[in-house]
Image 1 (cartoon, rainbow, N blue to C red):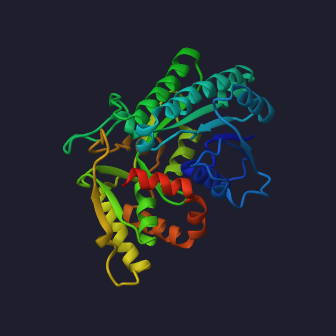
Image 2: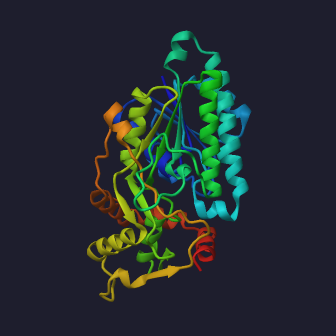
Image 3: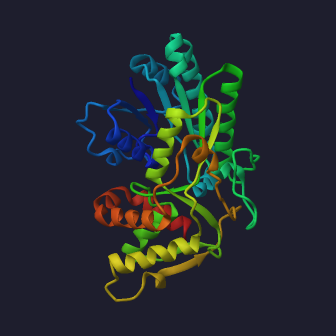
Length: 352
């Protein structure tokens, strides 16, 4: 028995593979295109692990997908492969359509062909788990209830629109063709191996580099923060016991404004890695022009997965964010390796 994990060298995918092999022995076939956010260093330590095989490839490549499925005969596909950064989707939406929409469609096509080739027992055990985002639901007012699975889709960015389209394709392949799919919609993840274009790793990296800490608008945008290893545990549980055709929202139960997140990071860094001049990292906070169409609030109601599958997050924001800061302080070589000239140019242009 084995599983196929797409997007395995990205932030959440790599954490999932590492955690999967840490808690069990079922082999993993990893597939990743290795774009700017896909990094083999995220899977460091698995090079000689016989339970793990990495394949560089693209989920839009129909033939490669078909060949992989026939060769390795996985019992499940877990799809993390996606372009995921809202800012980049605003600058270049077509790449998001290609990966998130066309790629998911072709992966579904390959999975369906493979599923139809399985014996009755194999088919009954097979699962296609699609990892998505809470951003498909749109934006909430301050007093609105959190997103539940029945909330209508109202995507507001090219990124969230592309993920919404992929979710709809996954749903359609279950209802039309009977493919046993599972969908998870998660809140904002944070933790080890997070590419430093997103808020938390960007702030840590900039702070340690003596650079300004940029915050969009007034910093009062609210997000629900989910420690990535809690997310991985939720996915394992959904794969194990989720009902085919169902969607499970996964949240950390930690609503924070962006400004609260940044000041918390500054306070932890003041303790763990004080500035040479004795000043607080808070002094480096700068407010910059808000991005177009910036959603005001996301919040996830995770009661369904808690009630039906017995999952709940193990980390509070306070415990998870300290672990995250400690990881970045202990892994500066990883940060240095991935923050290339291209990365610096993009950040300079985006947050000028």
